[in-house]
Image 1 (cartoon, rainbow, N blue to C red):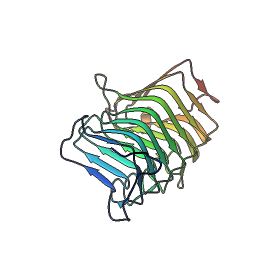
Image 2 (cartoon, one colour; image 1 turned 90 degrees about the vertical axis):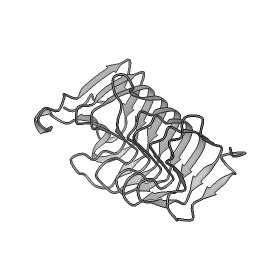
Image 3 (tube, rainbow, N blue to C red; image 1 turned 135 degrees about the vertical axis):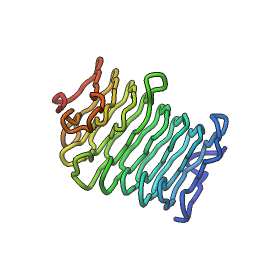
Length: 238
């Protein structure tokens, strides 16, 4: 527990991930009240969690670099981490700029802003996980001003949803992300996205794109998009 996330700083000195959580911790393991910065790691520059379910709250994760995966935070399976009131900004990753989620996470009251990545996934958020019984959930989240530098077939500026699973989004805004041709959200590999009271607008490239079924692997379920009381600028591209 840090005293104040603005002034209590954990500096990784570019020597691996700043924080590593990989001993099966549960939600009672709380990291709170810090700025996590200056990490240089393989999978998660700022925070790397594997086989654990920590609570990450009241944090600033900034100016971290990953040489393979997510610059800011990497949450690897299994586990059910909680991310609450976290600012993820100014991070850079080879595949994901802000946060990569491969577990059944809950993300609340969080901002993913101005992160960048080279190619392959997303500038802001990449998600591989969730199920009908344990969906990945986003509440009151802003994903904005993120950028990916390469226009590959799966690349997107804001948020990539892939590898199956169920994702619920409530009061989420995805705006001003730059993916060249896919700016907002990309769905592929049999994802179900349920969106309520949310905004996807002002992104460079398609606001929401769904990979056509004839481009998926044989036997992959259809991608499903359910939108309720939301504003999607220009609709979406299938």
